[in-house]
Image (cartoon, rainbow, N blue to C red; front, side):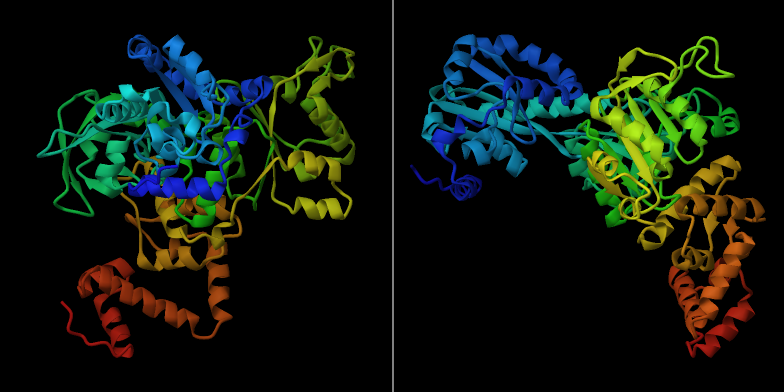
Length: 617
C-alpha cells in the first residue's frame, strides 16, 4: 500500500490501521434487507427532504458515468442513484443500499472520512485504504441539520480516470444547498432571516428564529459567520447576539419586507451585518399584539413544545437534551426521570415533535391522577354497555387515540399493580382489547413514561413490577433538579420575558439582590415553582425592577432561614451583591444604589464598614 502524505489522509490511514480493516470482512458490513427497511424507515423525513435534489442530479450522473450516494452519520448508504452501468460495477465492491462505508468497515474513503473529519473530502484511486476501491474517485461533503449536528454525507463517485478537482467544490455546493433546503423545510412556525456582511456579498447565511426570538437554526455559513456552536442554537435569543434586531422580529404588518436592517454585534462591535426577512410562518404574527397577549394562555396550552422551546446552558441539562434528540430518531421506549417541575412533560412532547411520528397524535395521561377503577377504561377504552354509565357508542382509550403517535404515561410509578400487569401485556405485542369487547386491536404506539420517584427503588420494595421496569428502560433520560443547575439565573431571565409579555409590560429586570436569591434558593418545585414565583413577583412590583420583597412569603422565609443557620453567610452575600452592583455601574454610587433599591447614604455607610475607598462618582 502507498503511504499518503496529506495530513488528513495520513490520519485517516492511521485510523484504518488501528481499526484493522479487513478486505475480506468488508463485504459483511451490509444490513439484511428486512433490517435495512426498518433502519431506512427511521430516516424517511430526511430522505423526503433531499429526494428532489437527488432526482435533479440523475441525468447529469448518467451522462458522466457516475453515481451519488447518501450515507447517514453512521456510514450506512441510504440511497444511491446514477449511471446504471457504473452502479452495476460498484455493486461488486458493495457500493449499495444498506452497506456501511464508515472508516471502521472500509478504511479511508470519502464518505466515511468526511463523516469523521466533518469537511469536504476527495479520495482518488490508491488513496483509498482498500485495494478493491482503487478503481474509484470519491468526493464527499457532510450534511448538517439546522442545529449543526451531522446528519449524513453526500458522495459522488466515478471511475478514477474521470476525476476532476472541481468535483469536490460541486459536491460541497450541493451539500450546502441541501442543508439550506432542510433548514427551510423545517422552519415551520419560524422566522427565516438572511444575514450578510456589510462589505461582502459572498455569504448566504440563513438563520431561523421562533416566536420568542430564540435562534432555532442556522446553515453552515451562518454558523461560521456568527461563530455558533451546537450548544448555542436553541438556547440563545437573537437580541443577545445583536442590537437592532427589533425591526426584523416585530415589524408590525411589514414582516415580509426584504429591506435590509443593520445588526450590530454585542460581542464584536466591528462585526456589522445586514439582515432581512425571507419569510415568516410564526403562528402569532398575523394577529395584533393586543390580541396575541389576550390569547397567550390558550396558545401555551395548544401549541406543542419543541426542543427549541427548552432553554438551558447547564451541561447536565444539555447532555439530557442531546440524548433526547438522539432518542427521537428511534422508536425505542423512553423513561424520563426527574423531580416534579423539571420539565418531563415538555421533553416528552419535544421528542414526539422531533420524531417521525410528529404528524400523529401525542396523547398524555397521568397515571397517578386517575382512580384505579377508571384507569383501565382510560387506557384501553370500552364497548357500548360495558358497565353502568358507559356511553352507548363506546369509547376508545388512550392507546387507540395515540395510534401512529406517542403515548405519554406520566407518573408511571403510581400505576396500581393490576394495571401494571395489563400494561406489560400490551407492551409485549402492542395489542389491546376494549373493556367488554372481544376484538383485538393492533396498535402502532411509541411509549414515553415519566416519574419523579426512584423507579428501581419501587421495584426493590415490591411496589413496581421488575419485568415492566425492564420494558420501560429502552432509553433513560434524567433531568437534573434546578438547584443543581448552573444556569438558574439565565433560566429566570428567560422565564421573565414570558411574564413580561403576559403582563404587557415594556420591560422587567431583576435587581442584584433578587439575582442572588435566585442563584442561592434551593427551588424545591424546580422550574414550575420559579415561573410561578416570578409571575407573582412581577405582578406585585410597582416598577420594572423586581426585588426580593416581591417574591412569595414562603420563599422569603425559607431563604432567610437558610442564611440564618449559617453564620456570616448573609453578610457575605450582602457584600458580594454590593460589589457586583459597583462593578456593573462602574463605581457610580447613584446608579448602584438604584440597582440595589437602597439610598445613596445607606450605600455609603455599608461601603465604609467594608473599608472600601469612597472615590466613587
